[in-house]
Amino acid sequence: MPDHLSNSQINLYLNCSLKYKFLYIDRLPKPFKPSGLAFGSVLHSALNWFHKQKMNGNGVTLDRLYRIFDADWYCQKLDHAIQYKESESETSLVSAAKQMLGMYFQSPHNKVKGSEVPFTLPANGNGFGIDFEGWFDLIEENDTIVEFKTSAQTMNQEDADNHPQLTIYSYAYETLFGRPPKTLKIVNFVKNKKPKMIVLKTRRDKTHYQRYFSLAGEVLRGIQNQVFFPRQSFMCKDCEYDSPCRAWGRD
Image (cartoon, rainbow, N blue to C red; front, side, top):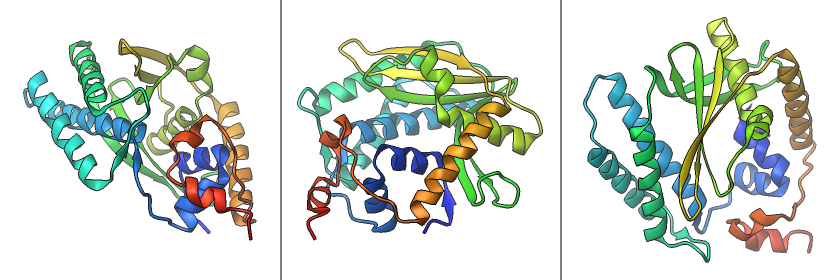
């Protein structure tokens, strides 16, 4: 059973508890990496490098940012074979990513206070009953938390207002720094035929925290009671665990 929880674990359990079991309990090896996962990982890595250079006062050119992306993408290919969707190719994804990085590079930037900042909320008094771990993608001046998201569809204001990851970020920030964040911001990079970047802002309060604690508690109870079953959805097409999933329930 887990010694900690994270928002990604909670989200995975809610999307497919059987995949959670394969990944975090059985620790089954992955035969490939979905292109969307690789794309998001490399984009985050390049943005993290960009922000840390800004924090250190180093000059950054767009060409250097592209080269960092290229290096990280190459490493992704060495780590796992990347499985692309029918409408994708390596060339199209790399082109889209560089367009997105160019949009972000040219956009206004606030002063960076921290990039890829990890946090741990200890079990004693955190509301979860178990250690909770995570990290902030970006902390800007004026108590602003930024989350970077890649998606095939454009996120809207309702998506931002209901996004659970921003809820735990807000709670963690308030717990660690003694004050709530003034702004929660999503930078949404949209992977469509014409890539785009949109920015959404939102807030959270204690009612959001209470609901998140209740949800996390139910997820933890399900894990502890070994409640795992497949949930069929559009995400099955890119799942790394298709074979063991199909074998589930045959015994």
